[in-house]
Structure formats: structure tokens, C-alpha cells
Image (cartoon, rainbow, N blue to C red; front, top):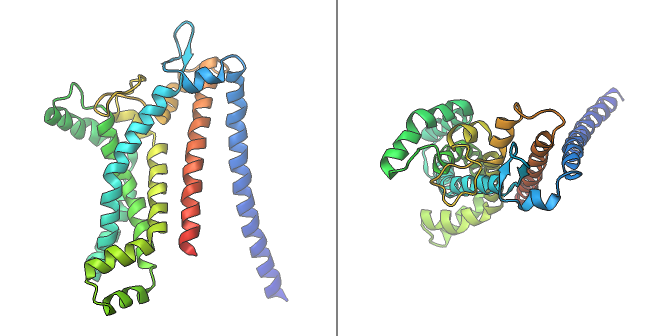
Length: 289
């Protein structure tokens, strides 16, 4: 009887914890929505979503989110192009190619990379990476979208590598043995059998890595140039959604249109990250099945 009671209490606490998380996320959404609606009462929603200028202190102020959204999109796409192939290839090497002793070392190094503070990476971007890109590519400034993409790709790699490696390892051993029995080489087995079987988990890792890139603030604020204009290239200064909130919230007057506009930017960011995490969770559920 006491064992049943203890199990019931533990199960109830677990259910309560899950319910509290859902409630907190919903309350956060309502909090952002409430202050965002304060802006849309005096500033048209269409001009906010499709406006091409972010000039919060001009007369009249302009709160077009398109430059910020495109800045985040440029940096995110650049980071994806870099980190997805490198992350998946690294996970394949760790899971199927590396010897056991080297595998343990590499997994430890990946965990160490995940623990590096973002402000340290931003400092590296300012001191070394930005000037290096400026000199090599002949840019007017190294503080541009490409610098941000490189650093954010580096930050997303541990997430992608860890989840993709777990997905590859979880593929049933019988798949590999069957492929070898049919005469497939090690590379053919990895490329045509193991990788497709683990695709759901790999895609989930990629989506979570993308969520990390979009939600990163410090690196984006330090190395992308913070120029709130519509970017024509990833090689020019730009500004992301997260950098705008972090950089301007301390300057905005509480209760002003600018103040509420930053909450509206946060709502846009919340919706984007929610959709990405929802897709990633769907792929993870599929992988478990």
C-alpha cells in the first residue's frame, strides 16, 4: 500500500510539472500578446508586419519588422548552410566510424563546446573573426551577417551533433547486419540504410539547432553590425529580432509605442520559435515510433 501511494504521488508530481510548463508558456504568450495589442491599438498591424523601416525615434515613428525579420533570416540561413552538413557528418563519424576511445573524447569535446558562453564567442568575433573576414573578403567592416552566421553555426553544432548521434546509435543493429549480409560496404550501409532510418531524429536535431540560432541574442548583437535596414546581402551589417529587443529595451520609455513595439517583436519571435520547436517535437515523436 505505501508503495502504491508513493508511486501515485510521484506520478501526480510529474503530471503537475508538465501542466505547469504548459501554463507558464501560455501565460508568457498572453503577456506578450497583451502588450503587443497596446501597440496595435495606435499603430496598424499591417504596417508593423510589412513595414520596411524600423525607425522608433523618428517623427512619426516607424515600426516595420521586415528589416529585423530578414536580418534574422539571413543569419539563420547562413548558419544552417554551415552547421547542418558539418553537424550531420560529425555525428556520422562519432556514431559509426570513430573507434571507441576516440568516440568518448569527441563526445566530451562536443559537450565542452556547448558550455562556452555566447559572450565569449561574441568577443572572439569582434577581436579576431570579424577583422579576418574583412581582410580576406575585402569588406568595409567585418561586423556583418556572415560573421554572425559563422559563430551561430558553431553554437548550434553541439545540439545537432548530440541529437543526430543519438538517432544514429538508436538504429537497430539488425539493419546493419542485414545490409552487410547482402554485400553492402560500410559506406553504403551508413549512407543508404542507417542515415535514412535515423532521418527523423536527425531532422529534429537540425530543427532544435535552428531554434538555438534564431533565439541567440548576445552573439547577434555583438557581431552583426546592428544596422536596422533591409539587407541585400549577408556580407553587410544587419540586425536580428533578438538583438533589437536586447539593444533597445533599456532605452525605450515604459508605456511608449516604442516599448510596446519591442514586445510585439518578442511576440513574433515567440511564434517563430514555437513553430520550429513544434516541428522538431513532431519529428522526435516519429523517431521514437
